[in-house]
Amino acid sequence: MTRKILVVALQIIVAMITIPAVALATMSFENRNNDGPSIVFPGGELVSGELYSGPEPDWSFTNDVSTIHLQLDNPLSSRLIWIEESDGKVYITSDYMGTWLGRRWKHWAVQAYEGDGLAVVRINGIRYERKLVRVFYSPLLEGVIDKKIAKYRSRITREAIESGETWVFELAPREGGLNL
Amino acid sequence: MKLPHYLALLFSISLLVSLAILFVPGLAESIESWMLGFLARNAAV
Image 1: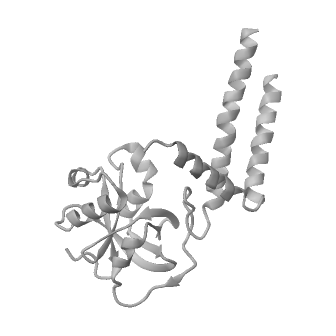
Image 2 (image 1 turned 120 degrees about the horizontal axis):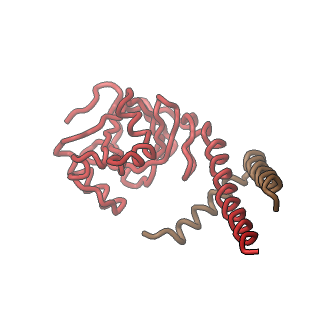
Image 3 (image 1 turned 135 degrees about the horizontal axis):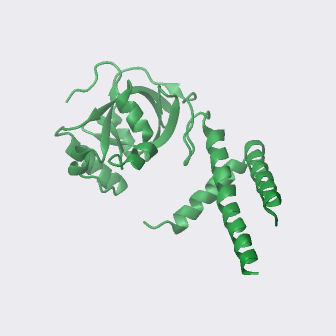
């Protein structure tokens, strides 16, 4: 009798894990080619929205933007991400990069750093072609840290950046690159 | 329930859930909204 109860309990537990896991995997699969990410799942190529061309924008408008869509050109996948503007430049960050699990979770950052870094961001419905350039040491990082703490109540520190726990990328223009 | 029957039932339900998510309009968004609401209510800050 006890064995029977244990078997039924085990069957229920396995079902409670398997069915939601299948649902999440299906939702992730369904979203993979969408025009942009959902809140939870990565999406595909950013297609809709005007493609910006012209002089470097005044990025201060991003202070009122909570999240943006970031798409790497290689591979073509997109996700939601926070954005920080500082000293006329825009930055994105990736936390938890000091662990294997973090690098698996935030694999886009590894792909951007090890690849060409070419990306498209969509902000307020407008697409901007940019290049992700990782920033290791720069006096400008203080502004990024202050902005991320003020905007998102983040616990980011300069030590975390310098130790590789947090990766910072400038969304640099595709031509010209960093100007530190 | 015998193991083969249980596995068949689990497979059938999983398949049904997958097909529903793929082909019922708005279902994936509803599940995601519910999931986010659940996390917002219960996740520790």
